[in-house]
Amino acid sequence: MSAPKFTTLGCRLNAYETEAMKELTAQAGLDNAVIVNTCAVTAEAVRKARQEIRRLRRENPTARLIVTGCAAQTEPETFAAMAEVDAVIGNSEKMRPETWQGMAADFIGKTETVQVDDIMSVTETAGHLIDGFGTRSRAYVQVQNGCDHRCTFCIIPYGRGNSRSVPAGVVVDQIKRLVDRGYYEVVLTGVDLTSWGADLPATPKLGDLVMRILRLVPDLPRLRISSIDSIEVDENLMQAIATESRLMPHLHLSLQHGDDLILKRMKRRHLRDDAIRFAEEARRLRPEMTFGADIIAGFPTETEAHFENSLKLVEDCHLTWLHVFPYSRREGTPAAKIPNQVNGKTIKSRAARLRAAGDARVALHLAAQVGQTHRILMESPTMGRTEQFTEVRFAQPQPEGRIVTAMITGTSGGQLTA
Image (cartoon, rainbow, N blue to C red; front, side, top):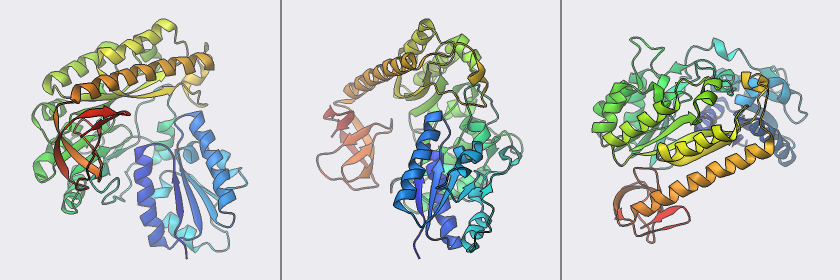
């Protein structure tokens, strides 16, 4: 009997769910299977998924090949039509024990080939929480799934469904277990993290969850938040930024653009000045705060002047770690129907200019750390990360999984050295 092989494409949440599926398939006794957890964020992501499926079939000619994830949820017929694919499973189904029990028991091929329900009808987060995923030092905890917003460029709500929150008590209990197992840092993850709590009794906010974790798990050294929508940040989260040293000074912002007209056409809920104001306030409360951000280049109707506003936003918000997305037309989204789509060559050029601006900001950030002393969480004997999530390379081995204090001596290849 051989354990299933997994391939994960896309986001951190997908990687988390792959770890959960490993446990579920092991409990079900599934063997001789290859499972591809797909991403649908861009058309290119779907193309890569199909390419990966063909490669895996060549390498595993006798295994059952199962496709799941966001692309399987939004385009089940695309993958069901591929000769290489034996089964297509939706995002909700992949987290259910009975799905994998059915797969394991089905020796004569009677399991339904496509098991993809209406994701919008799902009202609960998957109850399957895993104790430890990431490195030996850092664990990721899914506290939210889905999204209630309908940005015009985004297919993800149709892959993930509406927003669902994990109750605070469940989250706290899991983090306590992780700390007991020796994890020094926990990262809260979700699709639309700042919407956490809207579907729970009394509608708590993300800041309430953060404060509760820090209060009830006093032995947790470091708590980190993944991507947030700055317009939804609540007072308690701002208070935590200002007063809680165990909340890490690094936030990844879902900004998407720097021009008000394009933001409106994207159906975002913030304007340029809102983003700048939030970044200024967060840095006032926590001067060492660093920001990452998602920015899309080449959204339909984007002129050079519109794009320049995105370029300037990198400086205006003091962004450091950029995730630049060349706009990708997704069938089924309102943006796909907007006339005046930007041509591919222009999109590619603008994305490159944004990445260059990001690289320049990273270089400035790294140079400013030389001579500073940092507390660094070791992910391997010679590499760790500062509280601002900056990689540090050590000349001498350090205790893996521990927090060490060291002075930064220089920079090399996008990393700090110590």
